[in-house]
Image (cartoon, rainbow, N blue to C red; front, side, top):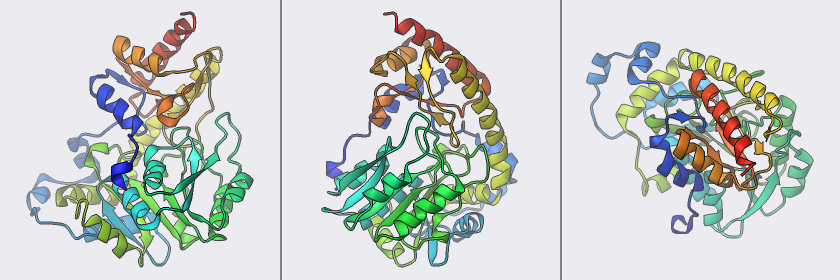
Length: 373
């Protein structure tokens, strides 16, 4: 399976550009905390970390962390947490356990690579559910028409990366109903669940339907991408199969990282609040920028997450523009071809507010000049 997986265009881009950027308006999460900031926000002490023994963790994760995850997200009956090395591992394990040759898998367009390429590499046929990138609501009638007897899984993420599209409670209920009436599994990427700007986060779908696996991460809302800890909530009967696959990949997660993660999730509100307040202020900046620069960009205000995916008007391929921004101005963005939409550009607004303002101003100025070339 993995030997045939496609290259991850987004990661290829970041490998070359990320570490040399001066201003990052590309990333899909809030900007990272320092360890000292995490200790201040959670009350974690150096003495407690000093007592940690570097023995292997249980295959399903540290008991304290698993209990904290269940307490915060409250999965449905018969579902339990599996702590992983980032949500990417959790997604890989679920796809490997559930999807095979001849299956159909419904995915969104545009989509994060892990939510499509792994299923394709397993031999599944991808069935594309096209999201309206111009501001329309997700077409659930279209989704209903795509889910059939050969559908093994429906893989979605809301709030959506890269667009920031999210679902209303009624749309969420309808999506769950569509999947539940089929024999398919719902693979629900909740990476951005706690990054919402209006209303409450959508609940874990396992409270409503049994055949689902949801994924979470500390990388996006919590400002801890380098912690490399994620999780899934999966049916208890499926967890042994996920662990069987894991025995050939990573075995378990670092006890040090799990200890920090447990402190964070036990104090989640305190950790989330500062970055969420910044993200909401930055979102207002992005909305104003989109309105002010309608001669250059056409985009839709995101309902969740910290990314927006506007079209750069008059530019058919944004990659050269993004390369120029990085090389000449130190401004990091993401070309739309990383999501199979070359005329668009992914912008992240989880950075410190001055960086967001600077990056957007430079982008608008350069884009205006770019179209005259």
